[in-house]
Amino acid sequence: MMRWIALAMTLTLPFFLLRGRAISDGFISCVAVLFLVHCVRTRDRGWWRGWPVFALAFWGVAILSSVMHGAGHAVAEALVLGRFLLFCVALERWVLRDGAARRWLGVSVTVAALWLVVECWQQYLLGTNLWGYPRWVDGALTGPFYKPRAGAALLMVVFPGLMVYATRWLEASSWRARLAGVGLIMLLTLTMILIGQRMPALLFGLGLAVMALLIRRLRWPVLAAALAGGAGLALLPVLSPPAYAKLVVRFLDQMHHFSDSPYGQIYIRAGNMVMRHPWLGLGVDGFRNGCADPAYVRDLVVFGHVLASRGAAVGCNIHPHNIYLDVATTAGLAGLACFVAMVACWLWRMVRALSPGQAPRQAMLCVTSCVMLWPLASSSALFTVRTAGWIFLMVGWGLAASADIAGDGRPDSRRP
Image 1 (tube, rainbow, N blue to C red):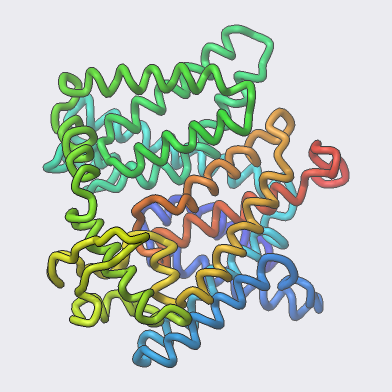
Image 2 (spheres, rainbow, N blue to C red):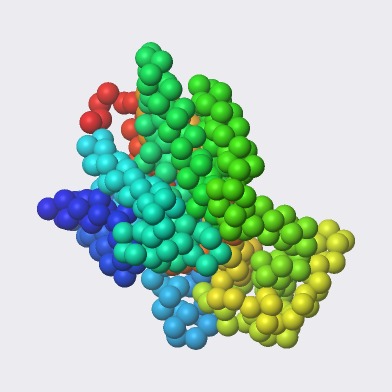
């Protein structure tokens, strides 16, 4: 009964991650607690072996750093970080242990992805979404939201939710199915461009590149999608002038003067914090609480190149906008080493189990994990449900699917 409750929460989680973060947090916490109860009842003492060792070490460093530098609120936040780690272990070892559960989660994610795509096109063609919200003031499509969040949300679900069907169709013998697969990839590429959010569009391109690298059959379709994307960018001044101004004009200007941009200044501030507290960092919320401290408002020297600080007002934010800088400012280089080791274990497990022809969704979950954990990207705060919920859901799902791949590269016939 406990597993069925946890599974029901997991199957509805993608929708609540889109529209109800408080409920999502409650579901994640409940699944983690139910898993611990299950381990006590079944006397399972081996769940922490493997990558959870690095996860627990990172959690311990974050708690220690928060105790040393933070107030009671920071310590409490550090203590509850473990719910995300336990949730991921629960998905891998318990909730999604059989193929039927993973297939139902696939249906849930596909419906969420379709909802996002349909709402984006409705807003583009009709001017408003289902709730009557128009596109954002900078021209970005908001999809089912009132703020520009559609790009990041679609990036989380598009590969295991929709791109998996393109992969399957391209494996078919019928030319109509293959053509449909190529058309779906091109449609999703154009959708991401029209949404008009820079980082999701770039990471979607990275995902296509990873797909082409991992799956030989997808290389020509991805090339066709890249050509379609290039044509879409060329036509963007006509199709959506605000999106062109944001995706192309502002992006090129920001890259040309990156260290002077708001993102560059935030990274400089985070770098100074890590330089001053290299081993244990500043604890949870350390960046938010210390970003205006004059000790960190200074130039940063990287490989002999001076990155100039422009003042506290420019470099201050509630988080560093990069998951690895977030980890480094929270738990220092010791915590970062544990986190990177955990990520390496995740990706190694998924890449080693790749069998795109037999298990296309596992391959797409591997692609999604690579995209979510790419280090050269701006992101929301790692230790929030909006970011951590998606990361640990997709990674736990991907690890569960990878555990079902036999040593010969085919799905294990002994498992459902």
